[in-house]
Length: 173
Image 1 (spheres, helix red, strand yellow):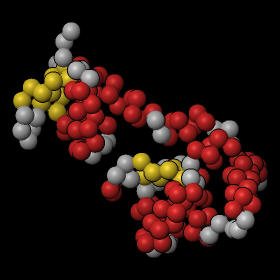
Image 2: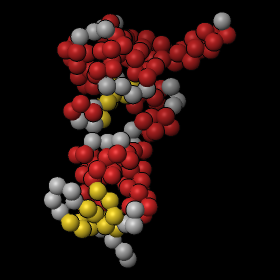
Image 3: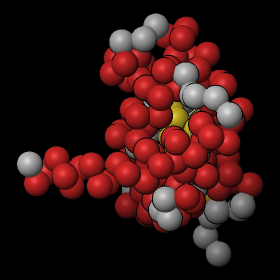
Image 4: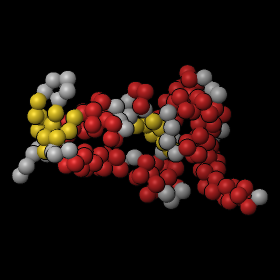
């Protein structure tokens, strides 16, 4: 019983947000929107496949509802293709006074990844590959390449040898 009461108190700000959003719009949110918001409130970050799994809705209905929710600012997307994930929108975090959690869900990876790549390179005698980065950061090869390219543009990494198995070296100052 105590756990149920704690859970209900934790969900109060979310329920309040939903009620205020419905009042602001002058109409109720769709059942699909409510189900997706509930999943994201519980999971914090989710993919379309995971939302489909948890809601038993069709992929088309989920995708359509997600696009509408993005336009309304209820949720935000990050990543591309099959790696695209969704989180609750900034205004939900702001209204619940959880700005730090929002930052953790969004911007922290773009700050942290380059430093992790440099640390990885240091542990490997200053040499890394795209595959090393993809495995270590659990990102796709194209995302790994984007991170490496950014470090190259900043002058922190240089291409050692090109081709399919390109290697990059830390630039020494």
